[in-house]
Image (cartoon, rainbow, N blue to C red; front, side):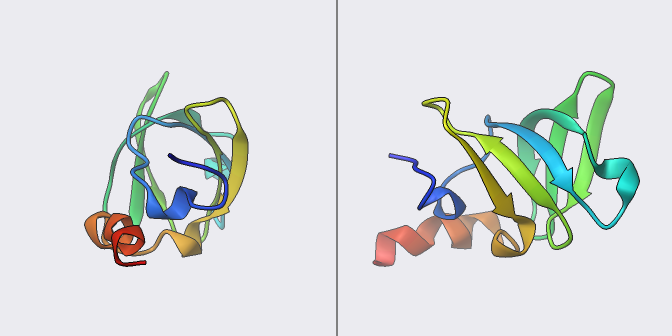
Length: 91
């Protein structure tokens, strides 16, 4: 089960997100659904198209499936998604 404590070790695709911090001020306020991710980027489907936001300089407000909202520093997400997701299986 995805919780605020373990969100960085879970699949993010399909979750709603709001960019609340970014080194590029134009990225702040971007909102939509995470549709993909790479090691360094979140790909977000917004009402105006697809946006690619760097993880390392962003802060993301993610809405979990149960409606809980959590802010996540993108630097905690910088890793190949499959490696990050598999971290919780080893513990």
